[in-house]
Length: 130
Image (cartoon, rainbow, N blue to C red; front, side, top):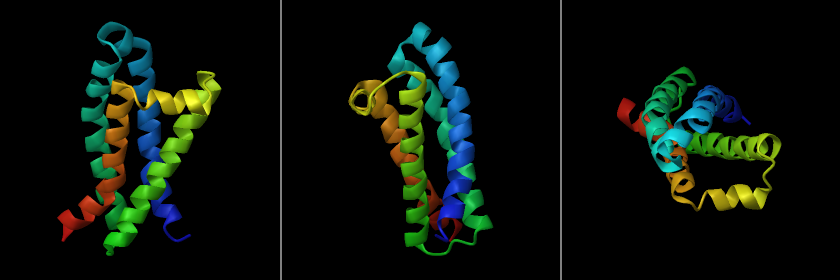
């Protein structure tokens, strides 16, 4: 339970930024550039923001163990996937199977790779701090 607070502190701002950028990507970029290029344009904003937040969370919560940093990233990753699924079901009317199938398409796979990196960033931030 002690890791939930830093995981939430990591997840929430990244999710909020992703919600805003995802709206821009979906409504404007994807129709102009295509889904894959739109996701590729979003990642250079999301990943540096995630890196800065990961560094802040590691420092603020005095994370010193690699296992704890990995757990924070994995909890935040799980929250991110659950939130995305909830949005897909609520806003897009997708079923969980539809949402999961989207992750196998090139744009979805690229987004998932970015999210996997998001999960690892707290541990990478801890390592960079040492």
